Every structure is written in structure tokens, then in C-alpha cells.
Amino acid sequence: MAWPMKRETSSLITVRYCFSSGRGFADEVFVSYKPSLAEVASPVVTVLLHCWLCVTLDVQAACRVTTVTQELLKEGFHRDLLVKVELGEDAGGCAVAAQMRLPPGIYVDPYELATLQQHNLTKAVLFPDVTDVEAPEYLARDLVLLLFLEREARCPRCFRAALPVHARYHRPARGTGEALLVLESPEVLLCCCHSHLSAECWEPAEVDTPCSSDNSSPCQWHRTKHRPAYEGSMLRVPVGLREHSSLVCALTLLTTGLCSGLILAAACKYGHFSQ
Image: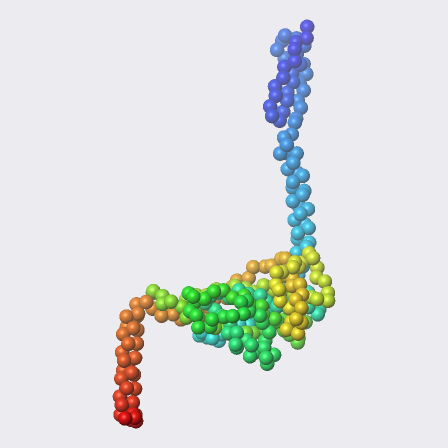
């Protein structure tokens, strides 16, 4: 007499016991394994991620890294900003520029910039083009500077440019005699009006500016897709101490009153007043 089949089922394994007698021993045992959806999808996902990583690394390897360095020369409130760029590939006849955002504590004098450009000492564009050079740091706003770079003679892929920048006056601080300004690393832009850049390495940039001062019609600027992270430059600006506010005000009033009295006395003594 054949006994009925006994089945034990779990989420992954199914075991079937076939009894042919009443001894309590199974004559045949069938074990079936049913893999879960996660186990089936896991190798597929792994292969897809591996392929995507390989493609990404191949594209980044084909797009050579562009090196950007910036330095703040001199000391005090009036500095020279030096920007150096080494491209990963030959730019050919393309124009190369560095776009940077200046914090409110730093500005470029538009009148000084116009004089430098008249003498062909530098090429740059300010956004906005109207700047209040007398405003303190807490009343100023950010500026966007597009600095055109010149090719170095001994290195065809190396470009550089320098531009005078100035620090604004800050509010008096408490406990410290200086303020720290962070100047972010520039973004390298290429403008090629007569050639094409690789779509895997470069993407269009929203810059509505001609490629050079000689060309009045705007061309399409491009920026690199794979931008490595560079540290910004730190600028230390001397500021006054709030603890000295009373002393400074008292000395200012005293000096103003003394000078006014001397001027008035000299005018009364040596002045010729008409009757």
C-alpha cells in the first residue's frame, strides 16, 4: 500500500517525501531549489555596474585632466591674482579663459582694468561691469570674473594671466585682527569657433561673451565634464578690533577738533577779510 506524499516547503527549498509503506521511512526524497528574485538579479546588477564603471573609467582616461593653480601675490589690501592652467590636450586655435567668482570682500577696479586692457596687458570681463569700489565688504556683492589666458612660449598646453585685485574694508571683529576670505578655484573654459571639442570631455557653458576682444560675436564656450576638486586660496585681510572702538572714536574727534581749530586760527591771523 502506497502512502501519500509528504511535502515541506520554504521560500527557497521544497522537500518531497514519498512513502510506500507504513514503516515511517521514506523510500524517495526529492529536493528542489527555487532561487529568490534577489539572487537572480544580483549577478545581473553586478555585471551592469561593472560595465558602467569600465565605461566611465575609459571616458575619464580618454579625457586628460586639466590642472589649475592660482596664487595671490604681494601683501596687504592690494594683490595680484595669478592664474595658471595646464590643459590635458592641445587647445589648437581655441581661446582659453578662467571663470571665477569673487566674494564680496574682493573686487577688481573697472577703471584700472580698462587701463590695462588699453595697453594690452590683460584681457578680462566683469559681471556686472559696474562696481562700487568704495563700498565696504558688508554692502558689496559677488563678482564674476572671466579672465582670458595667454599661452606660454615654452609650453603649448600651458596658459597664464595676472590681474590686480583689491580687498575691501570689513567690519571690526572681536578678538581677532584679521578676516579670512576664500577665493574659489577657477573654472577653465574653452571657446573654439573653428574647431570641435570632444563631447565626452567637454560640455557647453552658459557664458555669453565673445572668444576675444577682437571678435564681437559671441561663440560657444565649453567646460570640462570631469572637473577635479581644487582647494581655494585664502586671503587674510586686516580688520579693526571692536574693543578699540571707543578709543578710536575719541582720538578721531580730538584730532578733528584740533585740526579745525588750527585752520580757523590761521585763517583769522593771516586771512584778509574785506570790510
